[in-house]
Amino acid sequence: MCIDYVYLEDVSRQSDTVTRHRLKDNKPSNPVEYKSRMVVKQARAMGILYDMLPVGMSRRKANKTNYSTKMKQLFWTLEFCFCLDNMQERVLEHSCPSNKTLHGVFENLLFSEKPQGQNSYATIRHQVRHFLDTDMNDWVIGMKKEGAKRNTYINLTSLLHQPIKDCLSGERVIEYPTIFIWLKDHLDPSIQLEDKYTVTATAAKDKDDEMINANDKAAQDNDNASSSGDSSSSGSDSSDDDDDDDDDDLDGNDDAKGNDLDSSENSKELNGQVEGDSSGAGNKDQTPLPLEEETNLVNSNEALPTSQ
Image 1 (spheres, rainbow, N blue to C red):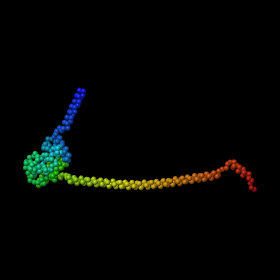
Image 2: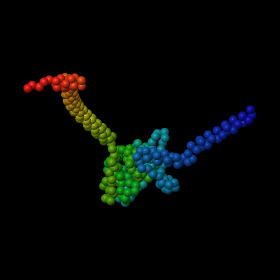
Image 3: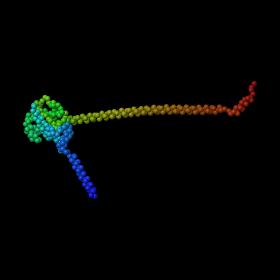
Image 4: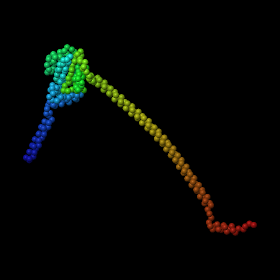
């Protein structure tokens, strides 16, 4: 009894040890790496070609992009470069929700009386004071295109009122996007802006309607083809039935001819039998006389006197 109790205690301790190790293995060893993997996963799920640099690089250190599991949303670090002639002011804005528009980000950064964030907005506004005197409609906005030639940007001017996630969708981003702002009157001719193709809700609905109409038309064509195939098959079946009827008629004629031939042959056989019977009867009338009667007849003939 004591041995069984000790055995059960050992099994219980081993089970507890395995459970603790399992919980330890499931828990991420490095929370920072886990958060980075979540950012990459969620960004790529939105169609963004997102990459991160090795740990220790300055751009990696400056990046504070994170994913909120509670709000199910990415909060971006955005780099803004305000360019005027040969001057360039660089500003980093953190914790920008992915569903917020660029117009809302600029409004909070430059024009809001009570901006939300941890930046020194008074200093930033002094540095870019030339842009404060103009309207946003007078700006040219472009995002740096990673891996492209120098001075090549994605034109985001028409996407000012679109969410950040739509602006970044389909583009390659390393750590965080870099957005350049120019004044229309001071745009460098060497700047190459590439239009970004976006699908609005109306365009997407129209495209879906076109696809539905195309599918309906294809289904109707298939139905027409199948109905024509059925009619042709029924026509072929009827022709086959007619052919079968003709064959049956021919077979009936052949059978009739065969019956006629059989009847003629039977009649011939009957005629032959009748002729045989008649010939047999004639032969019966001409049966030869017995031998004794023949000798008597000869003797009687000899006894008759000859006429002088």
